[in-house]
Image 1 (tube, rainbow, N blue to C red):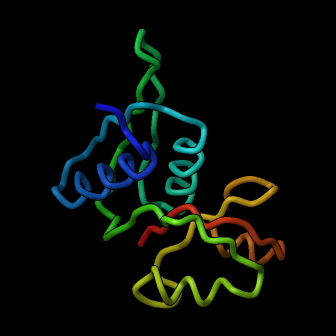
Image 2: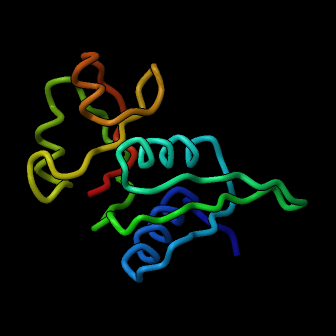
Length: 130
């Protein structure tokens, strides 16, 4: 059986293991977009360090969990968002203003919606975490 959305699988696995109180999650398959989203989670102190280990099947990531994630997931369909439309999507996907963040894919890379607002960039919504 194949995975349709590896990023959705990764986020649901991290959220469920974090709610269970586990200290580590093993994520596979590994992709550049998954590493970018995990880097954003690490920078915002939702997860600890993560290490990539190579093996014959393409490698896996070991993610240290801190117990700070309440919820999250991917946004399907990938909505286009302009610089002044972030508030509408924050109301739709986040439980309260300033609680959590949206992951946005812009022409300058993946970033949170706060960074995109500061840089006055639009893009496509990828995920939400709170």
